[in-house]
Image (cartoon, rainbow, N blue to C red; front, side, top):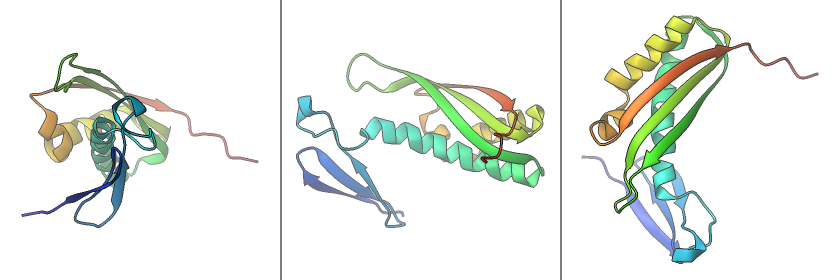
Length: 143
C-alpha cells in the first residue's frame, strides 16, 4: 500500500508529499483564510491528470519515432456549481510541435486515456473527459 502525507504550514497553506518525497504546495484565496501563494488543490488535481497523460503520450510518440520538438496540453473544464464542486467536464487539447503524424498523436492520446493514465481512469465516470489533437510546426530556433 502506498503512502502520502500532507503538512500544514500556516493559514490555509499545505505541503503534500507522495512516496517520492517531492513536495507540492497548495494554498487558498484570502477570502477563505489563505494567502493566494500557491495552486489550489483542484488545480493540482487537474495538472496532475494532464501530467499523467502527457508522460504517456510522449513515451508512446518516442516509441513510434515521432520527432516531437515541443508538446503541450491545454485544458478547459466545467465544475459543479454546488459543493463538492467536482469537475463535470474536462476537455484536453493535445498539441505536438514538430514533424509528428497527427494519427500517431491521436492514437497515443487515445491509448493514454483508455489504457495507461491512472488519473483519467480515476475521474472517468465522474467527469466527462474529451480530447482534440493537433500538430503545429516546430518553433523556430532562437538566434
